[in-house]
View (cartoon, rainbow, N blue to C red):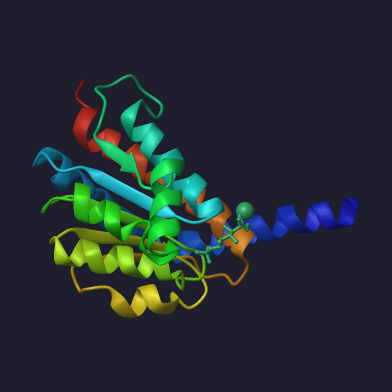
Length: 194
Ligand SMILES: O=C(CO)[C@@H](O)[C@H](O)[C@H](O)[C@H](O)COP(=O)(O)O
Ligand SMILES: [Zn+2]
C-alpha cells in the first residue's frame, strides 16, 4: 500500500516536471487573453465533466471571490454547477447540449470559454466549443493525452494547454496547478499595483 501511494506521489511530481518544460508560455498567453477579456467587460465561462467540472468550478470561485489576495470580484460562471439546468437539458434534449445551450443563452462576444477535459473527447465540451465559436468567444482548452476532438476543433486564436501525460488523475493534478497559475497571473496583471 505504502509503495502504491509513493508511486502516485512520484508520478504526479514527474507529470508536473514534464508540464513545466512545455506549458509556461501557453499559460502566460491564456492569462493575457483572460485579462484582456476582463478589461473589456467580458466574463469567463468554464465547463468540464467529473473532476474537470470541479476544476471549472474551483477556478470560477477563485475569480468570483478571491485567490490569494483581497481584490475586487471578477466575473466568471461555472456551467457545471446548476443541477436543475443540467438535468433538464439532459432530460429534454441531450447531455451533449448541457453546456452549449447555456453558452447560447449567456455567452457574449468577447467572453472566454475555459473548457476542461483530460481526454478532449467529451461530446458536450465539443458542442460547447462550437457554440463559443458561433458567439465569437475565444476558447482556452485544458486537455491531456492527444487533445482528442477538442484539439482538432480549436481555432488558431484559441489556446490549448495540453498536459503531456496519459493518466486522467495525473492530468487533473496538473490542471489544478494550471488553474492556480492563471489566477495568480490574472491577479498580478490587474492588481499588482494595489
Ligand atoms: O476525476 C475523475 C478521474 O480522475 C473522473 O471523475 C473523470 O473526471 C470523469 O470520468 C470524466 O467524465 C472524464 O472526462 P474527461 O476528463 O475525459 O473529459
Ligand atoms: Zn479525479
